[in-house]
Length: 340
Ligand code: GDP
Image 1 (cartoon, rainbow, N blue to C red):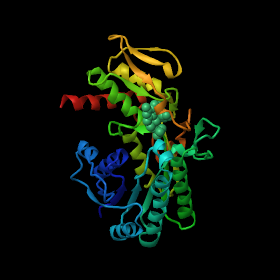
Image 2: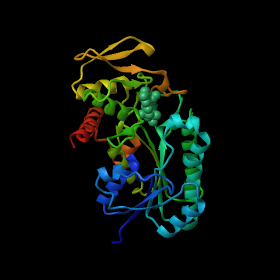
Image 3: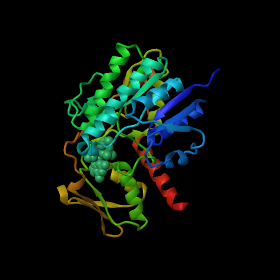
């Protein structure tokens, strides 16, 4: 049988790397797209020991000619669009760039698939941020969207355009509405990785303070390595559809801090309130966690979780890793860096 061929945009990111590994294990030929003038950073692919197993070619999200060429010549069985400007906070500072990268580029890709490679199955990385300020805590595929950041609006544009290409142009395209998913391969700017990385540095006396924003925000956190499997499953169905992918359970940032501290055998004592709230290391009696206005968001989603019952039922997908195991996996991986 002919080898299946997959293209992944954002292949050097967290999800791109895990997905590439999964597809290689399933016998796919994997090609990754990378921006032309960007600093090459393949540490995640190296970490997973797959950097030599995939081919990386130039792929410019805003260059229609380049996109057409890649899709026309590649004739990919599956195309996973994971590249994005993925920082919610940054989207307030760069709304035009965020819109171009996250919204318009998707139309370029879908047009190219429609015109040159109609059998390519397309996966779009949508986001739970699209639900925004909707008045229900549980969110599923039928929930309305009230996006509250340029990031969320850009993702929603792509999500809805996908409907057009599926319904009107009859392409096979799926949108995965993923809730937060983290891992040792997460970038340092995301709160889970920041907490793990800083508390380990503090434990090893390489840093003295972890500074956070709003620690009462709740998130539905899962493990990226589990979630990429859902992406692949979406493209193996008879009928293309959209799916919410989540753990279904929320915790606040403070709980995440406490779980990481426990894993590292740091005893925390919390004192104070609001911006003066802080955590003291019981052993050294030093304040090691503080709150700063700097990390608060202009517009925050406080409490939301996803229901993946549709994915359970149709894709037979369930998350395998709960938050305690996610914390353990992240701490162990980070500690290994210092043992090398
Ligand atoms: P996001 O949900 O995709 O924006 O993922 P993040 O990991 O960046 O943020 C998760 C939540 O943690 C958000 O609600 C943030 O407001 C909150 N948070 C609190 N302190 C921090 C911090 O220092 N950095 C980040 N990135 N988020 C923080």
